[in-house]
Length: 209
Image (cartoon, rainbow, N blue to C red; front, side, top):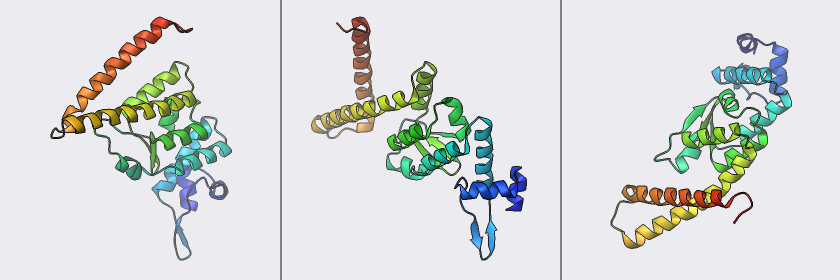
């Protein structure tokens, strides 16, 4: 404990307090010896960085609980391995930089529940670079992250329905074809229809037709 506190630049008393608050995981014990490792040191560095950004210890405890309530990265990405999307590994600090002021326990829990985020040790894994970039862009334009995530949940439901429609269509009428080869056709149809729908909605104006 003394060695870990020294490396982290804090007092042993502070380290004990963090342990009591559940901000760091318990050490590995061998008899009467408690072993800490780089995982604990990285967590302490994260806590220090979040404190510097103005987070309270209570808020950090809530963030930690939200992270640890999620599936780990192997479980989350192993369930539906992305074939075209590129997962992104982030530190908690980098995630906070993407969504300044919007990384709350509630938003983290929603993102974990959607499967956008997973936890892998001290890192966070976002399942899609494109979704991460678009979400951050919307937040920069003034859309609250909570609203972005709520919209994402609705988009997920519609996307699942569209995927089911195309897969059923191809399995019924082109059962011998490779679905992975034909999936670009489905994407082109959805992109074209969404573009046309956006044109119609924009033309209608904010008050409708």
